[in-house]
Image (cartoon, rainbow, N blue to C red; front, side):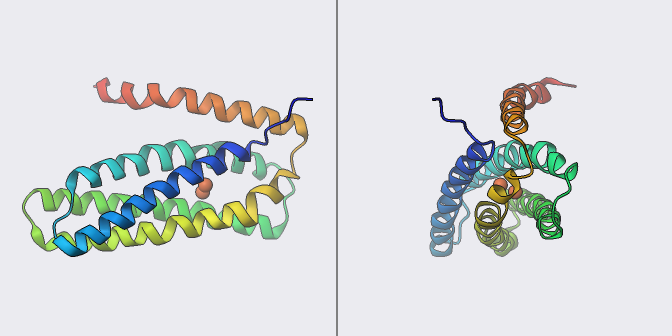
Length: 178
Ligand SMILES: [Fe+2]
Ligand SMILES: [Fe+2]
């Protein structure tokens, strides 16, 4: 019999990918504390990863599909509380990435005094992501699956695939849309 994949499977795999980026940021931060010079190429790549992959693609599926699905179910107070906290976390993640982008731009314009800000925002992200991921992996995803029937879970998985399929078009169409 074919093994069924729960929709949280791909989300948890994405967590492992996000953790790899966080490990790279930790190494970069170590380098930065030695040299005092931010690697702008790395920061640009990390920001693109965090904005497109971690936020639009990963948080997008959580918010637009999983959380919306849960919102229609009679979930426990505990799970509703965790979900609200996770949504607030996503807002914090976006705000912190934006602050990092702003600091990086000012550094690019020659303002060396923002190195401290660049370090601080990277530290915030390094602390934030593992904490957020741990809540989802260990206290939320699996217990939440019980609110959905097998068919609903299959439908959610298909929804995730369709969501992902649209993203590459969204990203590049936005570059050429006047
Ligand atoms: Fe999340
Ligand atoms: Fe997540």
